[in-house]
Amino acid sequence: MTLARTLVSLAICCMFLGTGAGAAEPAAVPGRAIRRSDVVFFIDNEKMYEPYGCTVLGWGGHAEAEHIKRAHAKGVRAFATAVAFRTAFHRVIDFSDDYLDAAAQNFQGKPFPVPWLWDHKYKGQPVWWGCTNRPLYRKFLEDVLARKMATGPDGLHIDDYTGTAGAVTWLSGGFCPDCMAGFRDYLAKNVRKEKLAELGITDLAKFDYRRFLIDRGIKPEDYKKRRSTLPLAGEFFDYQAKANTEYVVAFHKLAGKLRGKPVTLSVNSGLNSPLSLMIAPHVSYFCCEVGHNAKTRAVPKHPMYIYKLADGLDRPLAVMGSGQDHAFIMEHNLPCLMRTWIATSYAHGHAFVAPHRLWCYTKEKGTHWYNGPTEEYAWLYQFIRKNARLLDRYQAVAPVAVVYDNAARRKWRGNIEPISTALAERNVPFTVVVAGDDWLDYRLDADRLARFQAVVVARDIEMDQPQRKLIDQVKKRGRLVTWPDDRQLAKLVPPPVVVEGSEHVGVVPRAIPGDKTAPVVVHLLNRRYDGQRDIMVSQKAVTLQIRRDLFDGRKFSKANLHAPKAEPQELEVTCDDQHTTVRIPELALWAMVELGGE
Image (cartoon, rainbow, N blue to C red; front, side, top):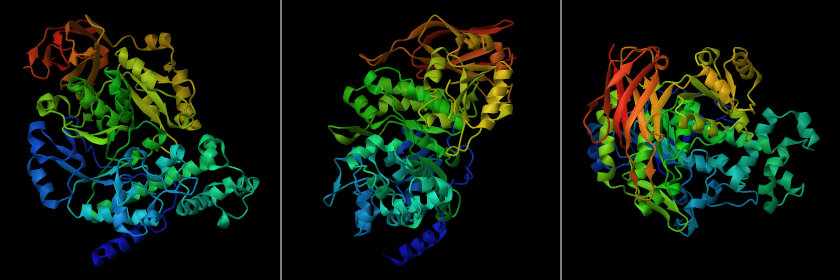
């Protein structure tokens, strides 16, 4: 080990002394790190900056100081560099001869490989799942971080940030000696002695959770099936989840210290589970994989729900599909399908990572890459950059709120994705508000709830009593909708948007909060995609009718249509006491209707 590496390691050890598995303090998050018109790259490619109009390097940035300076000079405003928490174990092998002391262990007490990297080998070893509770693995990660921060990036990205916690439920992970020691500390601080005594645990100093279960007849082949019902299973998962979040927060803090100034934090998290949401209060933005179900050859619904949930968390997204999605697009040559993903993302105020090089995965091929043809995508990103004024600062206009209940989701209840999908299909503008818990540091706010015409909840809510009281107050005032009460919703919120001439048009109204002089923007998304021919079926002679109270009664006298590969077009617009009506001659993929005047 070099002297420099030794000094860095000593500084890191001092910083982490005393950290345990308690709830991490909320981090100070910088202002919005991703603008709504930003073009984000996954893998860095200097030659593609100009064709796509790249403004953010979100993931695979080369950690070289001169390269980062050149990127800034070419218009890349924010350049992040990545530390992989799960996919770089080959470097651990070179870092220490005792590399297996950095690996996670399952209930058998054995290391296990990362399943989707089955095709990767190094020096005869697979890609072992690293344990973020083990001192050697932390020492390795922090050494990587020190070298990357020395190159002067603007941000830190962490891939697979859930670490050991991400292996608990499906790979029986978390049973290395360091995890067992950490769990002992957790139990001492968080579980009553009386409860432990009831389980026969009287001496925590000698307690080993794995041995405790084995002594009760739990065999490795049974553990996964019975895990959630076993004694202390909930506490064990809680320990792993909180320990990992605390480490990520401290890791980010260390990054800023090493860099000499604050850096943004992004993580790869699909926002599809309470564990994946836990880090939300601490990140600047998510740069992540979100399943788009490409094999259906249809415009997907799931990403829209994720965009709405991210709005509720007040965190920007830079998304891409899954590795399987990208592989399907490449294998079947479906660039038009991916363009629907791009349009949907930006219409909802987030970003879709430019597809010039995206990770692909299939069981047959393992890891490979999609190098999307520039001619198929670059023009769409140039349209986004050209119309930044109609994207930046705009937020969803929403008379309806849907409540996400994290406590319910931890019990596999309260799923609001079907609610979100149904409202979106009906073109009912809505947003998500978050009822958090000890995992997710968000709380419902009475003043904010009071602004909505209707608040929608699932039937099986589990939130704490203070937040439940706020929901009860909404109910007393007659503004609560328990899904699926269509009659109550229609009573509270007459259709804000009506589309005539097509049933295949999605409508997303957006405005700049508090600015009644700026134009409003209504995004129109064509949902009529032909998956066999990979083309959009144009929707023609569409009439858009919008209730004026959606935009605080504003009367519009001007309307312009902005669409990719087309010049701006002035539209016919009329206003009466209740509605604004606009006629759109044709909608191909995506268009923005800019409403202004008066």
